[in-house]
Image 1: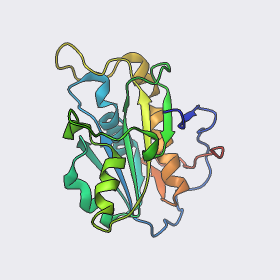
Image 2: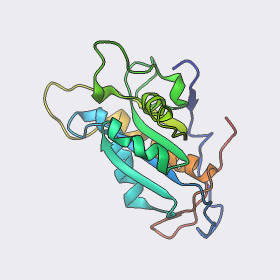
Image 3: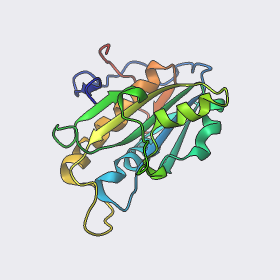
Length: 199
């Protein structure tokens, strides 16, 4: 992931920018939260999904899905949406657990070769297959470096370092949606709006 952007809380800090009355763009956006809730930190994507659902309201042009794993069944998503994002665990970046990355689909090695598993399908693989059908879509990936991807037994819950940074991951995703023109409001009624630096 050498071409990815490592994010910091400073670059994605949130401020009270408006009353939550922003007009949404017409772009159709899909966010896929990838991961297994039964495998500790591998479930950081679904945990971010839960966090956003519990705390925020998104405009109708944004659809979010807790998908578990990517599959070729999602080819039609590439046709239906203008922009797709994935949110997933990162296992071997060399960075500390809780580090958040923003990267293009092509920056992650495609899942190919004789030992490839369909459960390890990447967004780049999905876009490659969709292009053969004439479907195109913009894409972006968010990931968090985690501590334990494969616990010795099924375990629901995140390690402390990952749990601590979960709001930052979720709010980084929301900042990206804001950049794409989504309207976002907080369920607690407080004003919402991200202040972010350009990447």
